Length: 183
Image 1 (cartoon, rainbow, N blue to C red):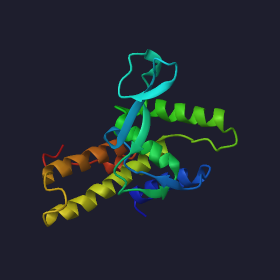
Image 2: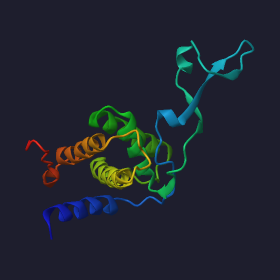
Image 3: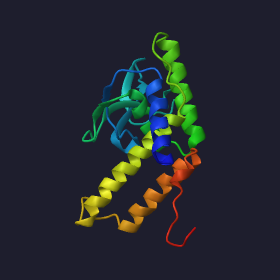
């Protein structure tokens, strides 16, 4: 068995061996451009009303009123949805870990019998493999004109290389990519 296949199986085992959480409906593309948000603001009568902007500092956190773009929705482990959000919104791994930890703390304080999220690393690897698979399928579409004509093949290949580099940074050295310059 190839070293890479064994490491992928080990990564899947790490995810599977952690406490199972039943699948739920996940958006699978939850990111800011797919969220419609609003603010509640104190009105002149002492009540709260929806408003697009508030100058009151405590009202600055937006509330989500709707979520758009559901064509990728699926039943999945809710941790995968959280991880996708971390990958698409957070600038780096440290920010993603902060969000993951905060979310876990909130779950544990509000639902003490709910399983813990566990470490983020196996989920980062799983999501990166998911991303590579999606990009490879997309590249197959591009060969015949594809569904994303605005993206060139070199751009797609650069994205694939970045995903493999992410796996190397997560400890999967077998994913090292040698580009056309030999680097």
